[in-house]
Image 1: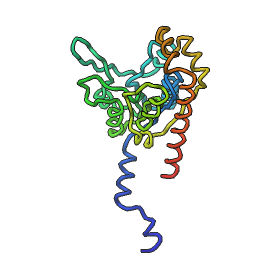
Image 2: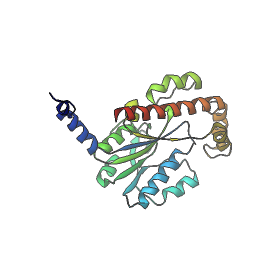
Image 3: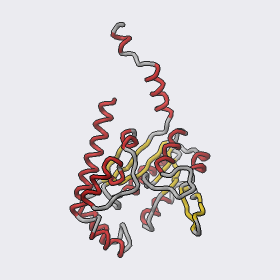
Image 4: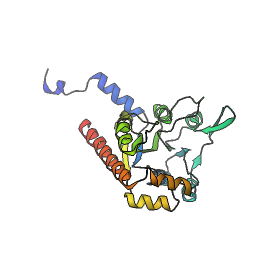
Length: 237
């Protein structure tokens, strides 16, 4: 076998590459904690794509009642939520079938690690996103570092909070990661100003999860995880 033959991709490698090209791309807006601006950045990037003439549709945006976030949603087509009955309650979730039928170029799907209501097609929102990608739809989503599966024990060790909603690390390695960073002092000021949670929830958060020590450690984890993904993708390339 000569050098040109040995460096030629195998049929299996070519098929794998073709399947990867056919799948939708995934972009994850990663942050250290709630309130750093992930949803804002997702909508900002979506607006830029709209301005370029791309077909962008909102599947889920969690505004948490913030007027400035709600205003950013206005330019987009927003798909109605799917409602499910669970006991005496009516729950609303992302409507994956509506998005597959609509099939835009790009879907904006907030809170990647979210657990879907009982009766949904998939238990987790990240599984909904994977189905959209299989259909050739690009997805921009958001994620906090404490929801990365491999970091679950580490985060629980210093925050004393066990996160139940996690996302497999392989999904991050297959995605473009964008880190949204905010220093702990600025994040705490946003929390005190009522820009993240309502007042009584903000007070409780400051006393527990949102301590400066916790936020500093989460910020370092987010930076390290983003760098790790970039390094791995460069080596793969």
